[in-house]
Amino acid sequence: MAEHETVTKAEVDDKITTHKDDVSAHHAKTTAGEINLADLAEKDHASLTNVTAAQHHARYTDAEVLLVAAALVHAARHQNGGADEISIAGLSGLLADDQHVLDAEVLAVAAALVHAARHQNGGADEISVAGLSGLLADDQHVLDAEAVAAANAAGLALASGKNIKLISALIDNQTW
Image (cartoon, rainbow, N blue to C red):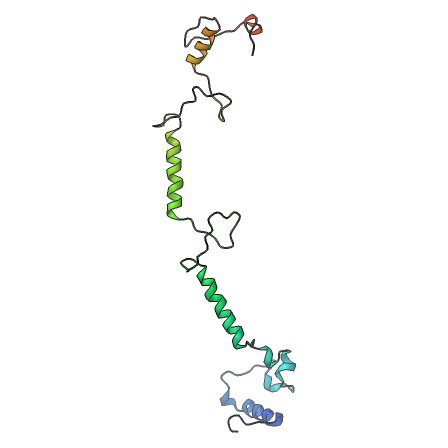
């Protein structure tokens, strides 16, 4: 048969049978119970698989291919380093892609923690709450000196570091 020659179904069946009978043409021997296409009475691909030749590969027009290519080029413009890169700054919620934290951001958080420690008790730049009014976020413990000053202001003579016993008469006469 010459290339691109039209052949009949009978000719194809004959070629398959001839090939099947030629043991030297096979790379592996078939075993009992194995189904071979050459053994089937029906050789039509579509009726065997329910897939037609047209369904094997999607067919695209030139315009469709160019449209997909243009979309890929456009998308690349908005990616990192693209001519029209999209910034996620100011967005909230979860992004579709995992975001990697930059070293600079990690260092900024570490610096903020070190800075905050400077303002805590015993820090190099401790913040005093003296003179503030209202309730503080953290419970504040009264120092002996403050308790003595408050008692002295109320007319009680107290010394720092001494145990204080309030009597009910004193408590009853105070406004709390």
